[in-house]
Image (cartoon, rainbow over all chains, first blue to last red; front, top):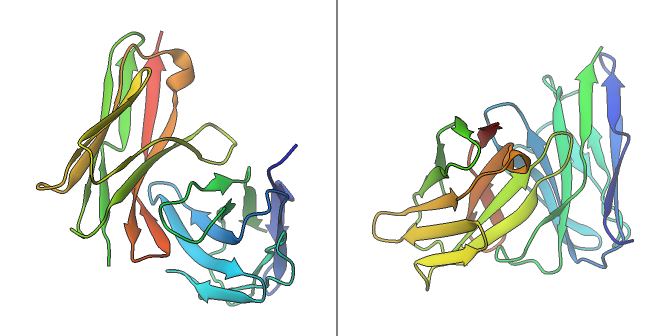
Length: 114
Length: 111
């Protein structure tokens, strides 16, 4: 069954702690994306990757880091530099790298600060 | 860069009535406009999209209209059903590699 798997579903971060959100896809898609969702603000792009070992900053990359060592995996690390990390994080992928491509989203990870 | 404004932020309609959600965009070069539906606890799913070479597209009870001159596009849902209750997002491209999303509309269908 193809799709995008995000884990964990819920995650709690302590002050000064880095946490990593997992995103795995078995759709053989080239492009992968991380979005942050806050109430009333839509989806904001954090990072995106169009090919293995390459990624670009989105609109709100500060305090976040990513890696793309494998085509199917695009983990997001929320660092201690991100002062307001509480949000719903969505991973997505698309077949190609054009903005005309359909995005396939995972079910999201809710990150909260303890 | 592209700026997408979406209205209303919340919408409540009676079951069987129609619902309309509107979005405006700023970049006249934008040529692709998708709509995503997000059900509670899930990620968004594409429900319909339109390209700038057409003015309207329909898929059963869902339609999208595009006015390139005015730079706005709208989602129309007819004969609404309880399963239409969700958050809906419009989007428009910014450059060749990114989509900019609207703020979202929470649609509630009242029985």
